Length: 387
Ligand SMILES: Cc1ncc(COP(=O)(O)O)c(C=O)c1O
View: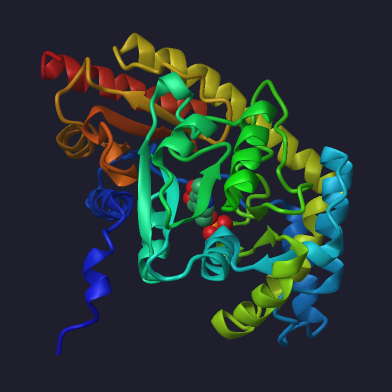
């Protein structure tokens, strides 16, 4: 018997195929430089691991309220006060299974079937699939260096249609590392409010910004903000994140959370309480500094090889390099680079269709030594092909 039609519309994550092929090559004894992985290479910081252990030892192994334990919601609220100097009451915070759970929850709460959600192309690939699963439609807005690879109010107004329920942006963004400044964020908020659309801001890479601190949209009581313990806090495998929601939508989010996932892992919630402790933040800031050093090595190294990096990747841990001056098709380049040189990177195809064959995402989620090795191998591979 065939499965549901919607499954046919869900594209695979090519990066997962690359990871799988890299693992095969490694199993066969080949060394692979991993620049495809979208998660920190650092293990979870020790105080968080210890708090998780303690939770288990204390029998914290039962369900929690669907929107999360009160102590963690309050700790997130305090984090906004400490880091951004903004008031985000715990009553507006829902703990979720990662930003993944947060995005699905928020979209389920805001998008009826037949409505559309606007997002950037390139952008995080899963978003369009969440919308598909809800019977909605994606408006993919092509973005370029000219608009800092971000949506702005002019573009949003141009692409909006009568069915548009929500605008979804990420800052810093995956795959470009591009950020929204305060003026950009404010103008999107004003447009969304004026046009009566929801604005969803994915701040999962907050904390990982270089040379500037980023404004959060969380203080605004009309915006949905998605965040996560995965990236800055280094807890990808614990599967925990959060949503800041407009107060009038909290009841719907609670009911949806009860039905969609019941509650987030109890151990993970107790572990996450330790994420905001000063000794943890100290570790995380050192890691952030290390990401910055890697970025500062990688961007010029890529430019030297002929790749274009027209916009300073000011956050996350990715460089979305324009490969059009080097190769006509980034997909086959990425495939051959892995097979022949043992360097794993992600083709633009994973992030949409706008100039996808002209781009490659390089993740700096490995040490500077390994990045250097990756760049040396890439240079030799290009020489061998006379690129
Ligand atoms: C922009 C963006 N949003 C959301 C996610 C999902 O992250 P998680 O579910 O681990 O919090 C990712 C993961 O890479 C991402 O890049």
